[in-house]
Image (tube, rainbow, N blue to C red; front, side):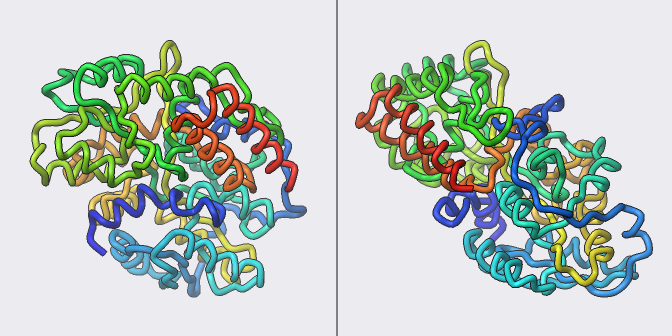
Length: 435
């Protein structure tokens, strides 16, 4: 798999997972992506296994790392870890698609198989894996290293006041804009749409899938809205903020600021429209930056972290992967040593420079080699800092379906904003009551 294709897969990993169970807060965050994760009173396993960082220091033996997709960046990191001695790690390669990876992991976890010591988890699998008692509680480890991480990345591994994994790579969207239309990034989404309406429009992920959930949440979070209440067990989607954001999106299509065709667009359709000059603005992931600079619009566009919605605070939605320890592992100490290295400054530099994987440590973004490998490093750091996790819940897939199905119905004129928000809220509450 090419580096560009891997970046695309990383960016949209969650968008293929809705049927299967899926694919931040700023530095003062901690609300778990619209659900109050740090205050949540949610189902947790009894007597979850815990481990401390000192256990990793004297670890020996073998560990297996279950991961799918491209191993670009991972091969080099694993090799560097093995050079240290003490613990020897090897890959167990899973499917290329994220839904395959999740299925293959869960089959082993349900069987209490020790085959996978370390699990590469999409950020939205945290609650599901933790609630089933499948992974170690890494709260003590995270507390010791918390200051190193961008806060939103730790939030993505948090469920019910506990941290269940350590982040290894992150992701957040960008606003792309043509320099002949805007000399600088607009300060608000309202300004984006105003300028888009006066030029060639804006494209985003508006098809009926996970990508639309993400696009809606980016505006909703900035507007001050949430999806779950503070307990994490009740829907908070029926709100004035949700109606305002959804009506804004509807009006954008009605006015022509966004083309009607956007309701069929995923990441690649939007990217091609932007590169072909059929849009002035685009919401997309960082992978589109390199591709844009290999196209006819090279040097003609800029990127920026998302603006605010009205008077709200700029927000995004977090992507990426975290590493967890299988509760059935025969070598949890070795697994922790492996995870700790992967999320260390050395491991993060290797993954960023060799695999173009967005780091999770603040300091890594100041590394000269990382800046060379990721020319948009500073914008990426800001985008991740202002991003929030999606609703942290074991039934996230059903929650996402309730969001994108009803938002799509509103964008295509089959529901009013009010009807769609009420139906969304009902669907989310029904999903929460099944767990």
